[in-house]
Length: 99
Picture 1 (cartoon, rainbow, N blue to C red):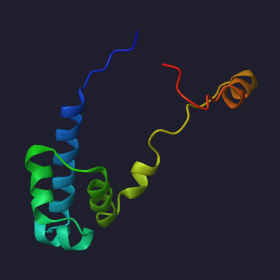
Picture 2 (picture 1 turned 90 degrees about the vertical axis):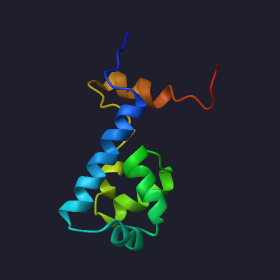
Picture 3 (picture 1 turned 180 degrees about the vertical axis):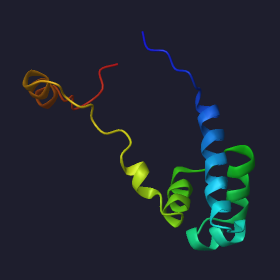
Picture 4 (picture 1 turned 30 degrees about the vertical axis):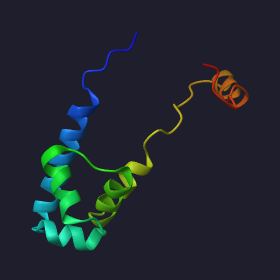
């Protein structure tokens, strides 16, 4: 059984806080980041204060901050440790869900 230490809401709060730190480290106002990203100031405020944002807007903000490459690495297939695992991984790809 796999246990998670953080729940999605806590992770969202952490990401919002980190984004705010990145914005402030560049000495940008919210309006500056909003203009550079194409995200409304209201959406940025909602994210920083309530941790609510669409995926599209989050990606735009990260792009404006030069951190989009970090997201690109999410959800990659697990690393394989043997040839057998690699073969199983390649042949066992389901085409649709079963449940």
